[in-house]
Amino acid sequence: MGFAHSLEVWQGGALIGGVYGVALGAAFFGESMFSRRSDASKIALAWLVHRLRAGGFALFDTQFLTPHLASLGGIEISRASYRAQLARALQGVASFAPPGYPPEPSAGAVISGMMQRSTQTS
Image 1 (cartoon, rainbow, N blue to C red):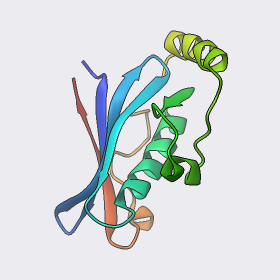
Image 2: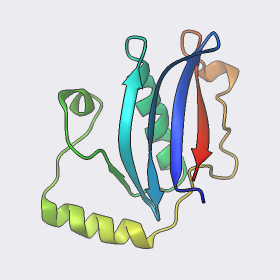
Image 3: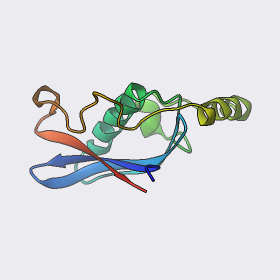
Image 4: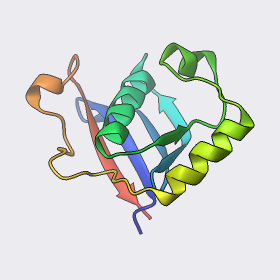
């Protein structure tokens, strides 16, 4: 149905990190991330943020703020602000795979032999 999405980081045929979540309207709810290699989850999160911006997402809910997320630009907002942003985002339209956005990075976007691949499940 296109609600659940994962973004994976691969190196040499091995899955080394990733993040997954659920998209509703123009809101994305991050559920979990993992690393099997140092900083692989940071690479996954950076690609995810880029992809969400390209697709027109208005809200990225990470559930709670950790030092890791704060180091990557995450901020905590008030409950009232969250509810207002959530209401607007749920009415919005966004795409995890916007037209013209490549599912695989270009050769120039591969970082130290690592690449991201996105998959979609329902």
